[in-house]
Image 1 (cartoon, one colour):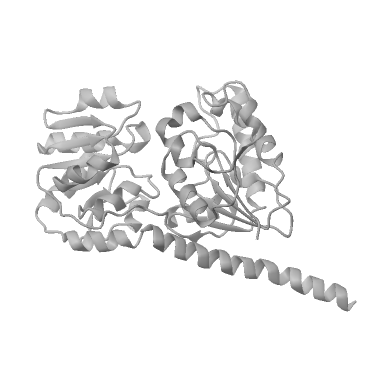
Image 2 (cartoon, rainbow, N blue to C red):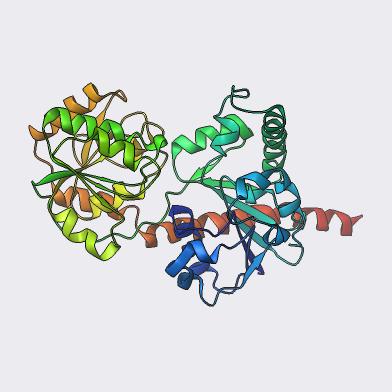
Length: 373
């Protein structure tokens, strides 16, 4: 089979790129089509894509596309529909905010989309806000309509969690199989007793201020790892026991996890969180919002705790409850292994094999019927 991979864009190495990397590992000869590649922003991570057959859409030539890619979103239909994928039997799109699932394929081609999420800026944001001009509102409505119709061209949807599967059913009226993304698992270690830990972006969407306020109010030490636009504001909120470390290389994380009591994930809207699985892979339990998709990852009262409301008081109660219990590091590691790379590959291979058989069946039947006539 001739296989092609399609990915939104390459401007950072995040969770979506981790999925793409494993897809390319499964299909090493497949070209990777993407809207644009920002080599400067990728920095050293660009080496991860050495030897790949990267093919960019016409959008790569737009002025300022790497820096102002959000401003060019009105042209998304043109980016993706201009790609010629007629030579391929199987197309796998890794799609999120930039709608790469919108590519056009032949009827004979099977298009499987690993949809990280329906774009939140289209489906979760209000239609009208005071700071948006009429043309921005029009573009949002236009792209939302286009996203829906483009989603109907996909043959099969896969996603990372039941939370996102429900959003796909709601917004696209399509079913989606759940195959959690591949996570690198450390596979050994035990939780420490020195501090609580947050690992992730420092942005308003992550509600890091909940973790900082809860630890400050509870007089508990907290180490914050990550970077983002909220750092300056969060540092002003933090008490004396909160420490900001910025971005930390992966090779240094094992020692940090070894001294952590638990990982805190305060975001109530998180879908799937790689950091949660990585922490459990080091034997560290997780305290997370019960409203988020993290509830599908941790086993409540066994590999962590869920707190019911996205408030400081609720998180403080969870921390107090956590310190009155004992959690098995081995149970955390065993749970993390269920999200390891080989598990992802095995599930995806089986899913695609089934999808190929189902996709070919009507074509064979149609061919037989035509020849019989």
